[in-house]
Length: 117
Image 1 (spheres, rainbow, N blue to C red):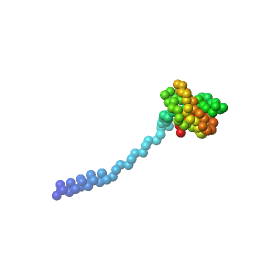
Image 2: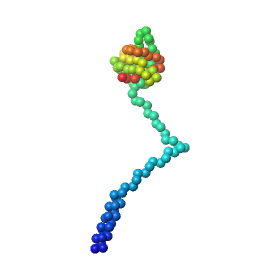
Image 3: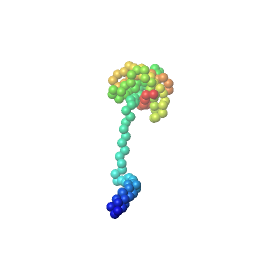
Image 4: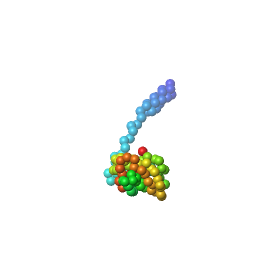
């Protein structure tokens, strides 16, 4: 009888312990002397830059990273300080990292960015 009571008490004791789970630990406070580092990764899409503008002929010369020059026929938007100010169509010819695009609408200035639509 003592063995049975001992087993029952042991089972209740172990069952009671598994019922209560320990509280989750809170994260440590931030270190004031060594703040966490922030990492910025660049976008992998092709972003062009307006190198030359011919207002009379309504075309621009766009420069792209090596190996990222888009093919002719693609439509791109021209952004000036984050705002879309025009649209172009890649026309060619293409030389190294530069290509020519026709201005479809809006305007472009040297230094503006070109991004795919």
